[in-house]
Image 1 (cartoon, rainbow, N blue to C red):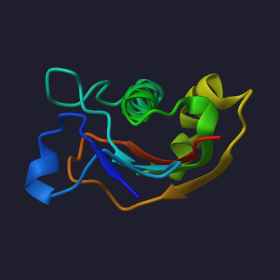
Image 2: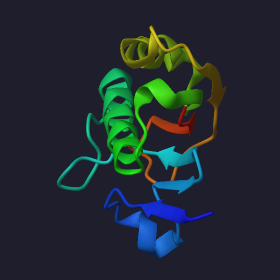
Image 3: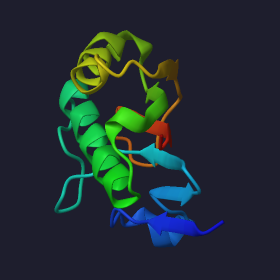
Length: 128
């Protein structure tokens, strides 16, 4: 099967050697997606809701480039630097997925590559 690689333009993709998303057949995996602003830096420093929305918009664009949509998402993973932030991250997630209702895991992590990031999201999708 063909392997399609999708880039979001993140400055970390070439340094780490990863793609934002990979599609093989009807399956798309989206890497841990951070709240990187369109012009670089962090979008929404200190604002977990805004950071989560930014992550989800990056995910949505990567899915589209891979030929998928949010409707194809079957699993999301929300990683937070503080689990006490979960409600605002969940509110943003719900705005994108309330009708789709993929399985979702929320976990706390000790930190990310950039200390301004409060959240990263991963997504798995199966194109029906």
